[in-house]
Amino acid sequence: MTEIKFRGKRVDNGGWVEGYYFESFTGIPYIMVLHDHILKMTEYYQVIYATIGQYTELKDKNGKEIYEGDVVVYTSENTVQSRVSFESGCFWVTFNSYKYELFRYISSGKLEVIGNIHTEVGK
Image (tube, rainbow, N blue to C red):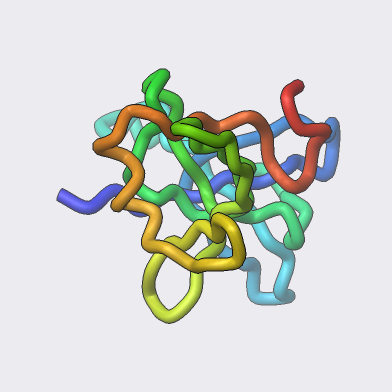
């Protein structure tokens, strides 16, 4: 089953929140966090639009979820770094000036998230 969720930086405290993205009728972006399906316990957080990234449904070698906007490194003979982007219905990484579909690198066990484009890499 496809898990469609998003991550964004909260306006109120600058923290990250993961959940379902929607915009209010006035165009304000929010992430909704559903805590309990049965009790319908939810929280809504206004987020900074530029920081919103979709979950790729993939995890790095450490089991960390990979989102659009994450910075990843691929280590083999050389270590190369790229930003995860979404274009033409697919998630991409660019290594050595060539664009590749992200899922091709997951099975290698050599891809690792080291940050994202909205925070200092490695923190």
